[in-house]
Length: 406
Image 1 (cartoon, rainbow, N blue to C red):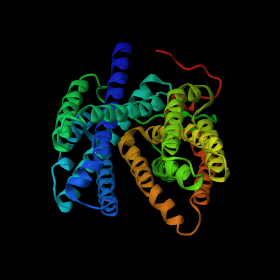
Image 2: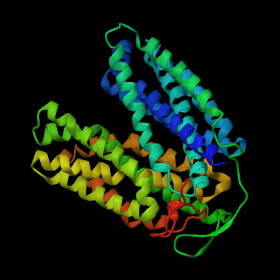
Image 3: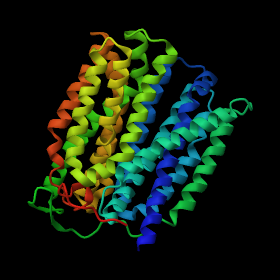
């Protein structure tokens, strides 16, 4: 059992890397596709909404399928589908066809996203210790792979469709190859009664309380991922437009944020095992609030870098804990609950850049970042929602209890 569990964990890493590679492959080809179709940045921004809408729909549909059919069935199918449709955005020369391609690719990517997170919840439950943050860290590895591939083929003259087609085919093969190592029978398990982190009895079958808890987790995911989306699009512009940094220097603002987030996620599982998921969410969000406040108010470039680093480090462990808590809230509906939290969070990530952009019509860009301070502070004060977790795992173990090792 120990060997098969480790294999399932490695296979889950593979799917997270795969998702990051497929999404990253689309992202790095955006400029070429935009030029090929002949649309403006504004038009592209509108089309990207369809990508998000497709992802949201895919998450909602696939989450329920994962609970009914099992993630061992649904996850490989989602991976094959996502790889197969990756080529679609590279084919159109017309905005309407591109819109349809992005809607389909978004649906497939959302399906892969929610099914791999649902399977990650089952792996974490079997390990009986936190492993979710490590999975999310490997998603970034996929983005690096996509960037390296794009750089390698840049001078070959290959069209976006050819590159995306090859990467998509390789992704589908990878999804099929990893399928045999996934955990079997990861469908609705029997209801259990257990003791949560605060020592009070909890019931996994308390559907009413579970639904309320999922709503809170989804709202927190919306806030946290809105902050992530804002950092993705505005961190470099902040240094360039507000602090007057050269473009080459400003680019490192996002790099600093992303590196800190990846590092934090690589370390977060051990921290969760020691102090609990509630502490990671609370103090992580508080750290992020301090970081973005520093970035928003400092006149010094070096301090802004430090602020963005703290922002990324603080946010790094938040989303994995929310997804994990959603999956463990009701084991009989892990996929559906993860889809609800991830879906609303994904919408928040897409909305983040737009919200900050809208605020810049009213206040300066750096002052608009204070909204992110408010969202992080709200998340920190609401972190008590993770205090009681129906499914007992290492993520909600009483601080100080030694984790089970495999």
